[in-house]
Length: 91
Image (cartoon, rainbow, N blue to C red):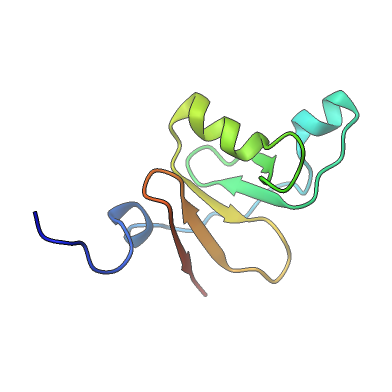
């Protein structure tokens, strides 16, 4: 099997959908806070990152299989694929 060059197909085919909100609703519901936010590129939900104590973005991936998140932080233009453990930047 040849080695893959460049990002995975999930990231190569990404059409970025910006976050519609800037809060982790699951953290809000439990009265917790977050460090950074990630927006799921399959369903649009926004969740807290792995630096946050609840790690809702990663939990969302494991629950749904939705592989791609983008940073929901202002000025950050990167995407991550959980399935292939790969990052890309975009404009």
